[in-house]
Length: 400
Image (tube, rainbow, N blue to C red):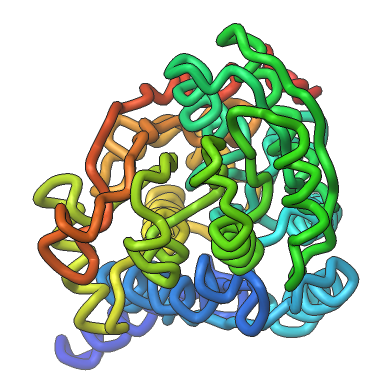
C-alpha cells in the first residue's frame, strides 16, 4: 500500500515534470541581441537587457514550471555577426525567442533566419517598416515603433506647422532609407515638398559637408533620418554651422529621451520628436520609469519600455498556450490584446505589427524643466491606426 505523503510527493513531481516537458530543454531562453558598444548603445544596449530582466522578474522567474533565462550579446551593427549569434543561440543554446535587434539591417537579417528556424522575433529596437511590410514573416513581430509612425508624427506635424520644404541627412542603410521614404510620403501628404537628400555612413563623426548641402538647399526643415550618436553629432554640428540660427529647423526623426538627455536641453530645446513612451506621461508610465531609474540610474525610452512589454507579452502567450511551441505562441500573440503601461488597447495585426498610440513631444527649454529627466511636453497623441500602416497597405504578402 502506497502512503498518502509519498503519493502526494510523487504526483507533485509528475506534474512538475509534465509542465517542464512543455518547455524545450526545461528552460525558456530569451535572447536580447543589440548594439551594446556603438552608435546605438544608449538607444537600446544594456538598458534593454535590464528591461527584459525586469519583465522576467515581474513575471515570477518561471513559466510552466521552467526557469526563464535572458541571454544577451552585442551584434556590433553587423548583420552577418548578428546572424551568426542568432544561429548559435537557436542551434546550440536552444533560445526560443530573440528580441530588441536595434539596427534595421540586423533586424531584417535575424527575422529572416528566425523564420527559417521557425523561431519568434519581436523587434523593439529596429525601425524599418519593411519588417512588417515587404519583409514580413509569420514568426516576426514589431513592437515599439517603426519608421512610418515616426514619419507620421514628426514629419506630418512639422509640415503642417509651416515646415513645408525638407532636406534629408540619411543614414546609408535599410533604416535610413525606410525612414526617409516614409517621411517623404508624410511630408507630401501634408502638402510639403522634398528638395533633396544626402546619405552618410553609420557612426559618422563629421557632418560638415552634409550640413553645408542642407544649408545650401534653403529647405525650411533639415530631416535627420538617422539615430543615436549620429543624431546627436549632427545636431551639435548644425548648431556650430548656425543652421537653426539662420532660420532652418532640425527634425530628429528618431530622437529619444536617451539622446535628448545626452545632448542637454540647451542644445535640444524646441526640437520635435515622436516616441511611443515617455516616463512622465501618466501614473503607470511613471511607476515603470521610477523602478527602471532605481535599477539603472536613468529613465527608459520607448525601446527599453517596449522591450519590457514585448518580453512580458511573450511570456503571457507561452503561459496561455501551455508551451513554447513557436506556431502556438505566434498564434496567441496575434490574438491577445496588449494592455500595459506601454500600450493601452494595443493589438497585433496579421503582419505582426503591434498597433498602439504614439506621442508627439517638444523638448523643453532649460527654464521649463523641473529636473534632470523632465525633458518633454506633450503636443499631441497620434492614434495607433493613424500612426501605422494598415495590414492591407503594409505590403506584407502574408494572408489575413
